[in-house]
Image 1 (cartoon, rainbow, N blue to C red):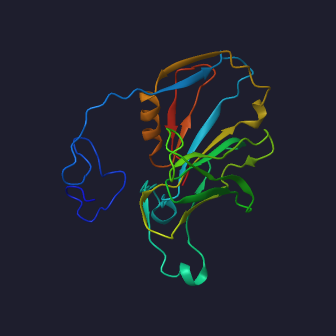
Image 2 (cartoon, rainbow, N blue to C red; image 1 turned 30 degrees about the horizontal axis):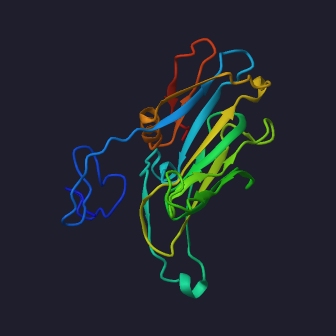
Image 3 (cartoon, rainbow, N blue to C red; image 1 turned 135 degrees about the vertical axis):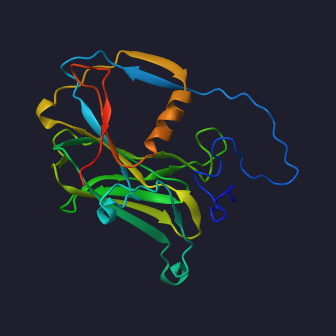
Amino acid sequence: MNTVGLPSYVGGLYCCYDGTQCKVKNGVESVERSIYLKYTVKWVDWSDSIVPVKVFILDVTDTWQHTGIHDCLIEYDIEKSTTGVASNSFTSTARSSMVLPIDGDVVYGVAHQHSGGIGSALYGEDGRVICSSKPIYGQGKSAGDEAGYIVGMSTCYPKPGSVRVVKGEALTLESNYSSEKSHTGVMGLFYILVADSSNLNQPAQIHEESKVPIFFWGVSMFGLAVCVAVLVTYNRRKQNEDGYLSIAT
């Protein structure tokens, strides 16, 4: 599948950008449909029992250690292995490292991969596993269980204080894909939530929930597919104030 102006681009995020359509077989006619999706939002009232966290979005394609600046490709290709049959190994591994600008405790972690993914892991500078996340593949035809597609990723919820990261520590992100066949436009992202350990308290109980259109979630997920960044979440004094802080180079 080629895109205008990118004759060598065979598939990925930029195949169907704004104002264009994906290539289809001759004779295929589009059918207009109305699709409605929803998701659930849960929240709590702000109190001293809530600990602010910083959300780190790590991208395995980030090459800042080579260029001096963050340079995320966001997506990359997996070439079909030409030696896997002989060695019985069909794993393609990509790695990148980045330095955290804060101290804190990791309280949540999850990877983001596409079809062909076989797992991702984040390691500390001493080689310890901070979080390992495996794909969950669908088995059927129903929505959310599509066979051959990743429908979820395993998550990590470390007990507060059990997985600590230190300011200036170099973390290594590893993303593994099957190379039994080629895959285009895959991603190797990893999200972690880091809390200030000095403020850890018992969590407040969630007491409200509301269903809203999923369009907001779609926008949020697209926003996550950006270069490595730190989302500064709720500030105790200014709950509506947030911003981005680049990871130290």
